[in-house]
Length: 601
Image (cartoon, rainbow, N blue to C red; front, side, top):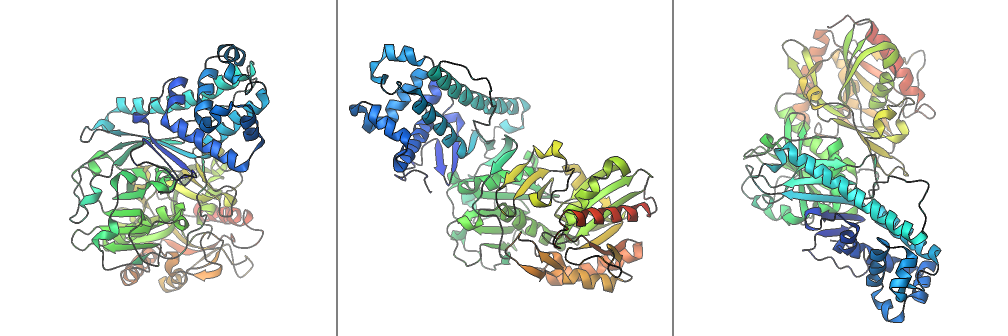
């Protein structure tokens, strides 16, 4: 484990860990309900010590002031000295403290320096990504009971309140005046999680993961802003055919498991606490599995992010266990994989492989089911790789909702699958309840009433993203009739011979474009310029190309037989100057196509 503090000390038995700019703490072992308890806690002492070491290294003017005004016998224990001062300031004014204890006379003589110390310490604490957790007793079914959910939420709120109250009391008692503006900042934990160990059907050879606790409840101070080390994903997910037991060796206390519902599949997503920011961000993307999906059951998918015992050149690999049928994804430990795209795309790749094995056609794209005010209902699928404009076009279509559309549901925003249905012909199914959206490509009129529920990733960098809930688990698993399937062409300009939407006349013509998978790479991965990806889907299709090709031919032939309109839509998202106008024009043209369809209600 990496420590943020110069001495590198981080005892394993402490109720907290400070690692890679994150603070992770067990609130049940360090519960604080008063300023005095907070200021006496181990975590406060560690934060204060780290802050003092930082200003000492910088030789800041605040540190110089302290060294000049703290009694000589106290300088070597400055952390203890300042803790004592803060405890007094939590309940007494500066003038009262000087009367009670003359050793604080000099340091309280210039309140501006001490105020600067307090403000910088407060900001130092808040610059960490902060995660609190409580672990419920094993087999207690504690996390199934609503009353315990309420208690957990109350504790999370209490922590925020006590940190704010302590900061305000210390500040106000130092200055002797009350502020005129109060800012309700997320001063406690950015996220809180309730953990529980649950017995599940663990495969032979993986017994060491039995003791990793499952996330059963999450609470988030939104909007949440995170700063991962990387802002793009690179490479492909490669299959290995030999899984050595020591590859998955881990220390259970340093790991957590997010039990995700990816469509109808259950995935156990394990992550090392160094990557807790990415792991917990999954709560805005995948539904948390129910207790009944875990207890005495085996998952369809397992993923391990942050493995230190694997030795291969690729950051991400996967293995199919032929005995159990479980697909196992592995991501090695390293700063270069500290990006949410890995946590999203690897489990979706494994999902797609399972779908292929079950006779479904996985698609890398977006789907919406909408009803226009004239009464026509249509299921629209837009296929395209990262940055092709699929989600942006459907989001632009959503902005037409008030004027032209009666109802609109997002079925999937990135990955879904098609399946034959006796009543619907071909139905579309989703995988995620959220979307991982590029900030640069948000349409004007975006649903700002919902954006405050988001998790923002590196908003100051290229490929800045947000993870936002957009739909319900019911809608992604219900299955919606498909009427239109389009390939997102983001690189061709629109002219007389290249219309915004162009429909194909045969399955062969359509398959040729979809197989080619051309797009202009917009910097969302490590690719540059015009690139080609088989079926615009590097997530499962190339890994099982033979099976995928057979199913693609079967489904595309059926689309034309069923009268489903298949074509390509020129979003121009990769054309300079059309980042907003391209998807908007594509959405308007798509709306005209939908109006011309026969009602499917």
